[in-house]
Image (cartoon, rainbow, N blue to C red; front, side):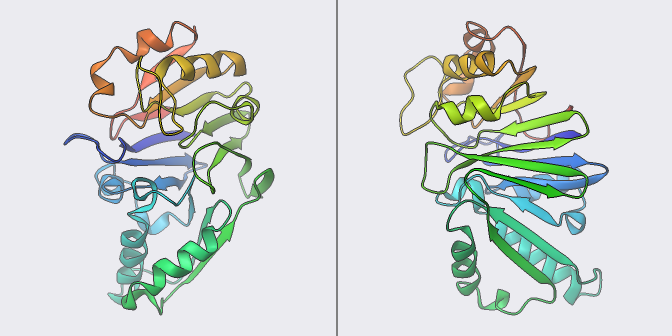
Length: 253
């Protein structure tokens, strides 16, 4: 598996970071986890062919920094077919409880998206779920942030990548992350106490240590947070490999 960071920031990200989003290549096929504003453009900058992204997953939909570029992605896929550059396929998008209704409302807001030349299927994932997708499987557990928030564990072969999404510390995240090859953790804060149901770097390190993850990638960074030595703070609790996310960073798993 190969992870590409499409967006390493949050609602206020600074000029060098898009908001939250990742592409995960499994068996030569890319999937997307979250697609906040700026991430769709970074997908193209990374050389990822968005016409081949047919499965998208969202850790929560209540906040635009995780879903804002979904409408841009759907519009672009429609445009490819309308212009004769693409062929109709099925695009599947998944999120937590209420996601299907959110997508229906989103499409209703754009008259140009009411009739698509391809099949778009939106589905709610089970809060405590396990689902097989061809070459990979997905496990989900509820997180503590927004009503629809879910953490996701992708497994392919003997490798695993876990996404916390936005969350405060909770036992579900520890359980979902057990032995993960790569644990992608939000790190909204550095050494200061976290607010608004988020993590800081030391708490993130503690979660990774308890889960015995092999490596962590700290993302979802505020401009003030990225000025701190986040690796040093996280290393107070976690002795494994610590990576700091930046846009277009690639990590082989």
